Amino acid sequence: MQNSFILILLLAVLLMPSLLYAKQAFPQLALAKNFKDSLMTHPFWVSEKLDGIRCYWNGQELLSRSGRLIHAPTWFLKNIPNTAMDGELWIKRGSYQPLSRIVLDKKPDEKLWRQVSFQVFDLPQSPAPFEIRQQQLQTLISNSGAAHIAWVEQKEMHSLPNIKARLEEVSKSGGEGLMLRVPSSLYEAGRSSDLLKMKLRQDAEAIVIAYQAGRGKYENMMGAIWVEMSNGQLFKIGTGFTNLERETPPPIGSEITYSYQGYTEKGLPRFASYLRAKQVE
Image 1 (cartoon, rainbow, N blue to C red):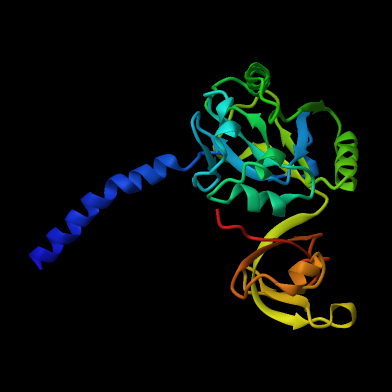
Image 2 (cartoon, rainbow, N blue to C red; image 1 turned 90 degrees about the horizontal axis):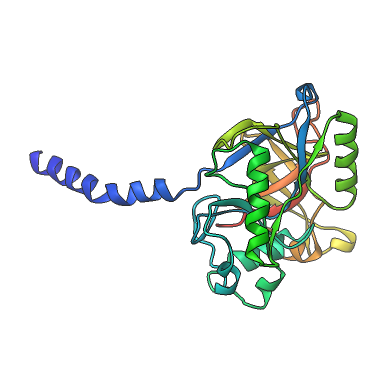
């Protein structure tokens, strides 16, 4: 019994450095809450919500939100300032899937990476209020001289109708939505009421549990997938797929992201549409 206790203690001591390292390496990023009309009690700084891959530049390396190293080419990293930055790797609207294949490849394809830009929207380690951080950020990016590093434009907006009009404009152009930041706010890791996201449609995750065969033009392909929500409810998604995705649908047991517009009386997502399979970062 005593020997077993000593063995467990030794294992704990040996594992502790790696556990501490993992905790330290995990980027402490600001995460957005959903916007509600009732929160419109003051102006907001508004920017487009990019459908890219969130990343953290620690001054030397690009890390995913989960803390995994992003294997970018040397030329891509060369001129990024050695200051911690919060942003997204991005190609253009509606290009999340090709972006994922490029960015998550452990052997970076130099040619394909030429499509990718680092869209930066904040300085996590700066203690300054939001407006000052943005000035600092613009100066850093301008001095870098790198064409693939860009500042995400922020526009101060004072009325809910104007913000909603901007949301409609972005959505009709294929954008994902808007990000709203409280003026003079500090950078705060974790979910914060100072950082809000606004979309015409919400999105969520579910687990694929079954396929439904296609008919008509989708004969010999997948027609729909049955998924399970986190609360155990099941429902079907039949739209949002490309023909290639219907020929090779997301595997049973895998997690997918779908968009929807509110809920039915039974608590199921209304107008659910497939967005993408979860990428392993």
